[in-house]
Image (cartoon, rainbow, N blue to C red; front, top):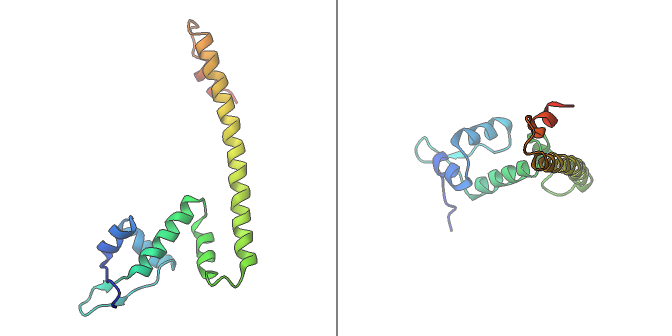
Length: 133
């Protein structure tokens, strides 16, 4: 059974990205240049869709494009230690960010409560609190 061929516009639609994103990924080496069809059009296939979706999902998880490039080079699974190291570093960074977000949540809840308690005050404690270091 023949692979389904996509034009760049159809690939962009199938992968949920813009055409310029595809071109950028190609320039960065994240996406292989496809073969040319009978005409002058490039013909992408389902593997290209999967590759773009992998890149986008990895970005959503906080991986940088440089880290994604490394992960894609290691996609044969032979160097699992490096893959684990990259993922472990990302997990540590996410945990740090979650701690920061919890501190920010607590601080914002505190100033919101102060605002409610001092509704008659001439100055908003939220604005004052944000302005302080």
